[in-house]
Figure 1 (tube, rainbow, N blue to C red):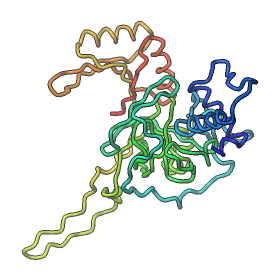
Figure 2 (figure 1 turned 90 degrees about the vertical axis):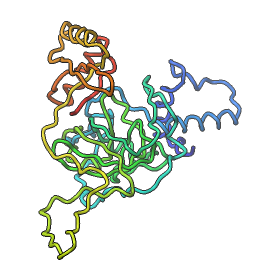
Figure 3 (figure 1 turned 120 degrees about the vertical axis):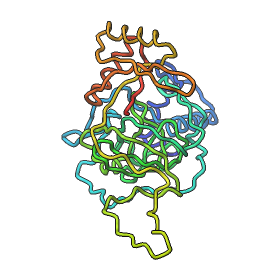
Figure 4 (figure 1 turned 180 degrees about the horizontal axis):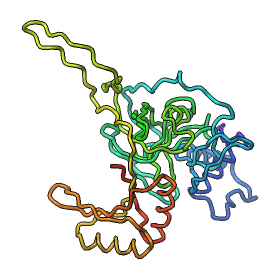
Length: 337
């Protein structure tokens, strides 16, 4: 609670608290006698609101420090990296350990900026592809959703749906670089973003300059081996009467190879082909090109998925998402085959 008494931190908390229940005109500090106990309760609620689910801006425009041409994450207006080059080559991957969900930051569901998120029952088995962003100086030293202190030079990340803490391997699908991070925060609460990485993790994935990257995220545990080193295998000599020793295999698949990942937006999955065709017709009439229907077998039934793409880059994804919302397709999802 004492952190909120810091002027800058109090201001940040106040801005976030307004989004979760203050009056629209922001007039929750009127000039009237207030009991000391009510004041303490108010500060406690304020601190809880700003610590577990920090509000992130709706836009995604890059914003760097004044007078600096260093790239900044597009996920947070006002956020930026350090004002000088920082060598993070000595920062090692997070080491997965046995963990239990923290007491804070793990409600069964929660709502931020009008969007409701439901947590997965467990971290194990989580596997997804999408867009990664990163966050830095604006949040450095602040409190993460599980109660830790955010260190932009540590290997951590934020995600909206996995129980925290959770360990995951994040791979840049374009260059094949991979890191293991500890997910201990919530976010990013920006459309079409899957994970928010620390400055150090983003640097190791070589995505600082772009601000975003197409990534694969896969949960890892203490029993999982790290990605194998890509080197020529040593010759294995078989002893008479004994089989050659098999090479150790990781408990999780190796990271995907570097390549040229393609990105699509899926606007819906329909049980009937006619409904899918109608969606494509509506998209075409609205000026959206490259929409198509892709049938997919889902057990005993076939779903007809309406997708658009491939899209050129993340900026094209964000612009198309906004256009789709105007056409009534507000739940478009990113698909990276």
